Image (cartoon, rainbow, N blue to C red; front, side):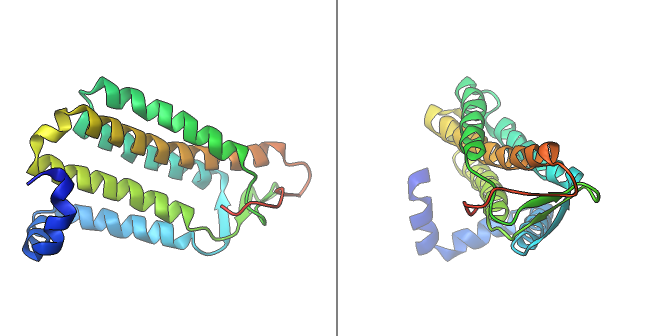
Length: 191
């Protein structure tokens, strides 16, 4: 069975999915639940401190880098793809205005932000990329030594990290440029 036929085989063989899930370490389900909870919280409008705005992208970038090195750390192609994709994604995000309603309250040092599905989607994307790569590397160990999977995973992890980092930099720019009590973000684009 080739890696490309995995989704088709899972649909035809539900027992394969049960086997995969039963061999998944328990802590993976805990991590999934934590990420789902953290991302789900960001679906609602809320506040975030300067520290929290920095911690999330650092943590998710760390998970991304760990995923890359644990499977493709030997691949120069993957290691080159990650920073290139991260820089490109961050540059694209930095060109976009902050979502309408984002503001920084200097006195309390907190951001007021509308809800967004983007963090949840990014967290789940990193998680499922790592999970699928882990499953495929067990089922087809030769994949981690091939250029196309290495390049693809390096680009994916890099793009996810770049989006997270770009989003955080936009917020930090707002905080650094805030004058007086409240600084509204430029309105326009939804995130």
